[in-house]
Length: 383
Image 1 (tube, rainbow, N blue to C red):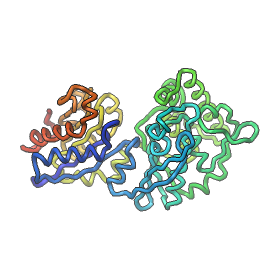
Image 2: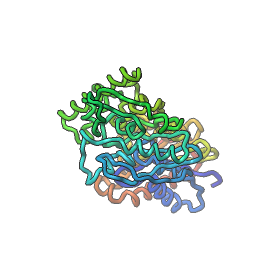
Image 3: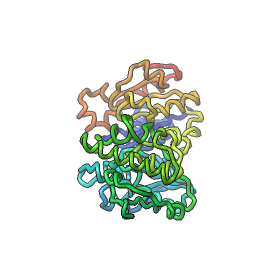
Image 4: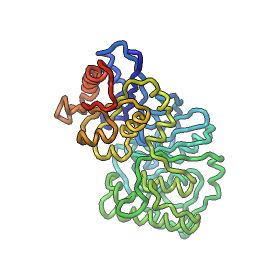
């Protein structure tokens, strides 16, 4: 075969990283067609795995010891290429770095994310791409901006303790030291979350329960975010709580908009552009993408749909692999997929799918190789 296949999956959460998914798909394809040319380009939509995707695309991994969500030190990665750095909130302030996995919804902080941004800027970055997702905190980005020199003060002029609950006592903000810390660097937020900061669809009421908050704690966090919004309006003249994406990562999107003059971009579309995805589509015969669960959430801008749209514009057919599939054939076609293959097609037990994801994925890839790569492909073919 003269043309190549692009393998561009997101992670299978809880089972395989995106690079591991790509490796297993490649192994299965090569088992049927040893001569096949493959381009592995793991992707992410701004959440967990964003730094890994950047590194796989040629960025250099760097590490820094920063404050974890409960204040303990964690070693976190970011990625750099030329004057661009990719910083992933989940590396420093995510649920996956909580000590013992114990969730602390009222006091968890985004401070380590700010420390990672500072490290990237000190490393020479002029543009910071901030991936949001998987956060342990609901602090409106207060910890992040505090690490970058912003002071959040109570009525006695004292710095607030970390966490979203403390924001109820916020009385003033002082941004005088921020410019020196950022050194002129610009910030772009890559996120697939379109929630506002406050209200029924906001950061606290939608996402805080996933971070361990009970109903009373959700209301405490909502009150803290509302107070942060009020003080930002008064002291900075910034009215951004209603912006789509302000509620991302417990309101870190809001903090980036209000304090860092960031712009928010759809995560997967922006990152595909950053990773040079379009260039890899030239001459491609097929694209294989996927994620752990292909469902209604996937249609709201998750990585596989972003890949399918980009490939569709280039006229390259796309198939998806997933752990489970909860979309109809019509929904899959409308999203741009020529076919879909799920681990549950081979193994109905979800626990075994998780435990044996790699080997099952290779079997799916063999099926893709037999059905999609033996004859000329049509972008409109269906599985």
